[in-house]
Length: 328
Image 1 (spheres, one colour):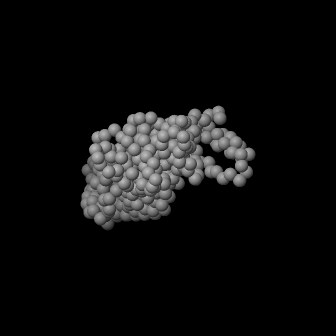
Image 2 (tube, one colour; image 1 turned 30 degrees about the horizontal axis):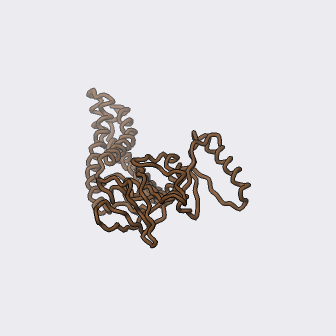
Image 3 (tube, rainbow, N blue to C red; image 1 turned 45 degrees about the vertical axis):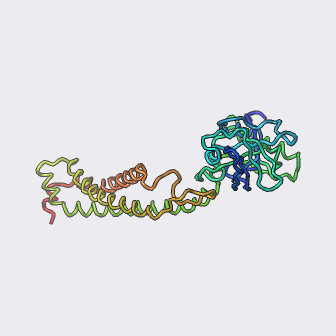
């Protein structure tokens, strides 16, 4: 079709998870028994990896000749190699399903890691088998088009092509952006993120109201002082600076207490890795003492405080010395 660059077949697209079973892995140790472990596997066509731009790290991709009448083959990811073949090239070794009869598959390639179920999951060992040698119960297509503008027209042409094949055929069309946005972990976390964002917005509103009230009260209490300073030649910017510096001094103390409190609370958060279902409650890839996160939060609060203090500071700048000196 015009605009289509590549197409791959699979039984599970990224963010859809993968099937699992107990597999036997031929280890590089001499005279050692095969290792058995429960691993995830995906059926894929020869063009699947190039379509999704999954880099080949070693060996080869699947070929059209890898069918039912040829020898069985498999491709593994880098996490698989790190766990079962540390420091060893896995090409030429074999894997098989643990259930009898044992039919060994030769490892012919290694691909780069990517997350199969959730954007935040820990990378897991994953094996790929040719679709021609596994015949999965359902099929998915991964289609790469030249640009995002071609996606709509390509989807329409695919629908027009599939409809006469079988009127009862069921299919869904979507994009990888939608796959990620609708993935399990993000879908489960979206309400929680919305709730936390609402609490954060409410906290900022309280900061604005509180700082504005305190700063306004402070300016009103120091009216005579401001009048004397102005009468003695203090400039408007210096008067505004007095108000802003006073607000920042209180803010600095609050930020110090808040930072120490946040560090103390994070000690109660789990530290184990995020599982296949994305069960962690912390931000993936962000440590509990991430300096950038704390720094940005402090900078945001400081900017909010300065903005809330600006109106009382302007009022102090424009105070008439004579009126201020007569103020009781």
